[in-house]
Amino acid sequence: MLEIGRVTRPHGLRGEVNVLLTSNRTERLAPGSVLSAANGPLEVRSSRPHKGGWLVQFIGVNHRDQAEALRNVVLSAEPIDDPDELWVHELIGSTVIDQDGVVQGTVVQVLDNPASDLLELDSGSLVPARFIVSRIAGAEIRVDVPAGLFDLNAAASDHDVE
Image (cartoon, rainbow, N blue to C red; front, side, top):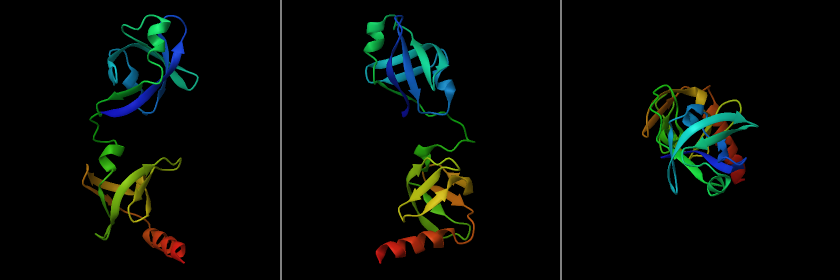
């Protein structure tokens, strides 16, 4: 299961809650969607954007006290099967191989960056995700990076040692 958001607080008297969606897939909150929570599944009755988040009504949550019980509850869902999308959970632990066939390291995390998400490798290198040309989920990522990208990272590491 992947964390897709969190209930922040109740909204109004009829059981609606504010949800901070951490997924970029808004269909996660479509009516009929079932989300997992620590206290059991929650089915979305309705949702709508509201002040940078979402107002969500779950089936069976009809009063403010029921909504209050959901405060700070983490919402999870199964991964969406979309072969055209890069999913963080499929990138972590993958070996990165450059265009020359050289293994550059293993992805330890993916950093959010406005220009392009960055793959952080165990070698300390940062690789913009836009340079990914192919992948085998959870195993291997092939990249085609500009000449010298990995040299810059190695030079920065050498400088840190001095």
